[in-house]
Amino acid sequence: MDPDAVRRSLEPTASAEEITGSTPARLHFYDPFVLSGVSIESAEHGRLLCSFVIAPRHASPAGYLRSGVTATLADQLGSAVFFCSGLRASGVSVEISVSFVDAATVGEEIEVEGKLLRAGKSVGVVSVDFRKKKTGKLMAQARHTKYFAVSSKL
Image (cartoon, one colour):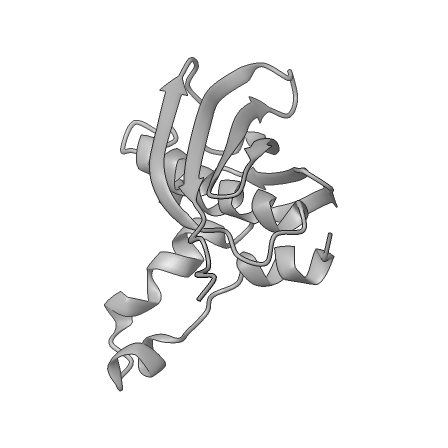
C-alpha cells in the first residue's frame, strides 16, 4: 500500500484554470464542497478510515446531510480504498448504491469506513459505511463496484 497514492487520490487533480483556461467562481465549487474537511484517520491494506464534520454547505435547508454529499463521498472515498489495496488505478465506476438508514445534522461528526470486498482481474467491490462518530450508529451504507481496464497482451 502506498499512503501517498491514497492522499493523492483525494486531492484535486486540476484547477479550474487548467480545465477551462479561466477561473470562473462556479468552477471552484466541486472539490472544496465535497472533500474540504475530510480527514484521513487511518489507511491500511484494503481499509480506509476518514471523518468529517457536517458543515452547513453539506446540508438541506432543514439542516440534514444531503444524500448527494453522501453518495459523492462514497464514490471518492470508495475509490481511494483501491489505492489502499495496492492497485495502481481505481478503475471506472460501474455501480454505486447507497442505503440511508438514519439522518445526520449540521455539526455532527461522521466516520466513514471503506473496506475492500473483492479485487479481481477486472472488477473490484468496496463497501463504505457512514457512522455517527459519537454513537457509532450507522447512518448510511454504500457499495461501489468498479471495472479495471484489462491491459492487452498484444
